[in-house]
Structure formats: C-alpha cells, structure tokens
Figure: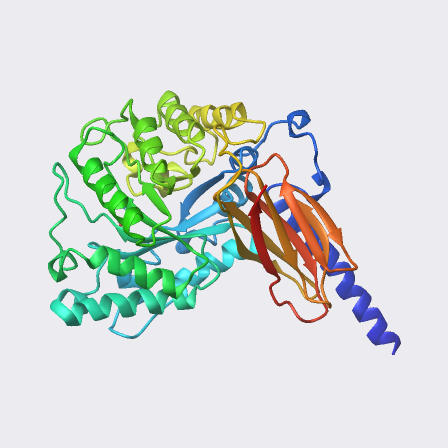
Length: 446
Ligand code: XIL
C-alpha cells in the first residue's frame, strides 16, 4: 500500500515537471496567463515567441536524420514553433511500393514535434518530384486512383496531427501560365481539385494548401496562373484554405520582388490564408529577410513563415549560406533583423483586423500528452473577433490556458474564450481521469 502511494506521488511529481517543461516548450510559459495587457509584455526573445505575439508561427524544415544532433534540436526547440519534414513525407518516402506505406522517418519528425509542443506542416501529398518508380509507370485512371489512394493513406495516418498540408506542390511551369507537364497533369486538368476534395474528406481539420516557388512577384505569369486557379476554386467551392509561397529566393531566377506584399494581399483577398513556406536567401542578407517577414506581417491572413533549414550546413543549398544560423549554431545578422521585424509587430493584433460578423472556425490541434493531462492547441480562423466555447466531458477540467482570455465554468464544464491580444492561436491544458477524449468546440464571431 505504502509502495503504491509512494509510486503514485512520484508519478504526480513527474507529471508536474513534465507539465512545466511542456509549458516552456510551447514557446510561451503558462505563468504568463491570463494576460490582459499585451502591450506591457517584453518583446519575444525567440523567433517562435515573437511571431506568436502577433498570432503567427515561425517554422523551419527539419530532417529526421539530424534529430540526434543536440545542437540542432536545441536551436529548433528554442526558436521555432512549427516544423516541416524536409523530405520525409514525399511520395517516395511514404509509399515506396504501391499500397505499402512507410512512415518511419516522417513519424520521427512528427513525434519529435508533438513531444516538443510544435505544430507540423505536412509536405507534400502530390509533387512531380520525389516520386517512386512504380508511380511513374502508371497513367490514366490507374494513376488517378493511385493519387487518391496515396492522399487517403498518408492523411489517415496523420489525421488530427497536421496544421496544414501542401496537398499539391509545384503544379505550374516556370515562365508561363501553363500547367507543368507531369504524369499527374496528363491525367487531366482537374487533378488538382480532385486532390483537394479527397484531402478535405480525409482530414477535415487540416488546412489544405497549394504550394509553389517563383510565385512571389504579382506580375509574373506563373503567379497570375496560380491566382486564377485559386480564384476559380474559391468561387466554385473547391476546398482550399491556403497558398504557400516557397520563397527560395535568388538573385538570378527568383529575386526578392518589391511587390511580394501585393501578391500576398491579393491572394488573401480571395479568402485563403497565405504562408511563406520554404524561405532561404543566398548570403542571407538581413534587409531581404526583414522585408520578406515584414510583407507577411503586413497581411492579416499571412499566418506564418517557415525557413528551409536550421543552420547553413543543414540547407539543401548549403554553399549559398542562405539561413539564419551559421554552422556553429550562432545567430547571423539576418536572425536579428527577422526578430526585430517580428517584435515590431507587437502588440499582437493582426495589422488589419477583419470586421465583426461573418463566421469563424476553431480547429483543435492535439499537443503533448501525460498520464493525467494533455495540451490542446486551438486555431481560430475567419474572424479576429470571436468567442469560442469548449465543452469538456464531466471527467475533465481545464488547468491552464495561454494566449487567450478565458473563463472556466466548472459547474457546466465549459470554457469560454475570447482573443487575448495574440491572434487566433492559443491553447489549453486539460486534466483528465484516464479518458483523454477531445472536447467539443464551437466558434461564433463577436
Ligand atoms: C528539397 C530538399 O530540401 C532537399 O533535401 C531534397 O534533396 C530536394 O528537395 N521545393 C520543395 C521542397 O517543395 O520539397 C524542396 O526540398 C525544395 C524545393
């Protein structure tokens, strides 16, 4: 009996310690909540915290093969609150033989992210590159079916764990408004919308993105072609939530365009979120990095920025030293420029708030789990003025919230949450008695 009591108190102590670690790794310590006056807060001291203060995320691509490198995981854990698996979710990695799914490396990245309180961008379901041999031998109806099966297989495995999926990556040709000539394209023009419809049904909670490079300049034919497609999709009700701008900038083929902000604004005006998804710039000029991040901050529906790697030697184009940390893990001038740009956007309200009215959606993102409690991220989209009602089962209770103004009614088991000056991303820690079921949630504009 005594032994049982001792061991359960050890469990409680361990849970408390883990809870504290989780609070820190969420980027914003729970001790900070509730916070009525965001303007009085010190600015963010890491990229993730600084971005969160304006309701955005700051992410990086990570590589499963580097998760044993402590310097790498230390920087990633400290600075970023979103991760994208660099190569682990491409088709050759996840379905190397038809119908046989392999998630070993992708799971390593996702598990690391969940353990460390990070969200995940899924990349990518259909891409002309990174295809296994078996897929390249198919055509027509058989290929279409294989595309659908692939989306369903991967999305089912990660259901509820992915913030946004790049459903289709790089479907347009360079230098023209034409579709890229690929095996997917040869199954018919409607392959992209078919992919988005399949993806929506497979995981209704994930945001669904179209992602491409060299679509930053508003005047380029490729940008216009993607814009026309997204406009067509939104007008016909094809489910699309976001457009990712890779922003692999280079002075030759894809220089930083002065009208990138216009492009982001015009896409956002179609009713989709926009995100910068794979940012890297040769030589990492501080001014260019600050300008790109500033463009995102100027557009309320620009929900976050991801850089394509942690340190320069981790980059797919390491010779260009295009990232924010050098090989020693030291911060480069571009890092400071980005951090300052993010902090200049504090306090957290989006730069151009949407007016009251309309509709809003609250999406739940399960986070870290412990024996008696779990973290739940909540993302509210569609309105900047909202009230979210979260109803827990009778065996659960709320023990902490962050980035939100919240009231917990223990008699009714209902949490009522309103914006806390940090945009639409917030979270809650829920205590449960062995039944970690998700609460029900609803959102109304206020
Ligand atoms: C790159 C990876 O960084 C490399 O490691 C890999 O060899 C090739 O792909 N656009 C994309 C990314 O969407 O998936 C690519 O990533 C870079 C270009």
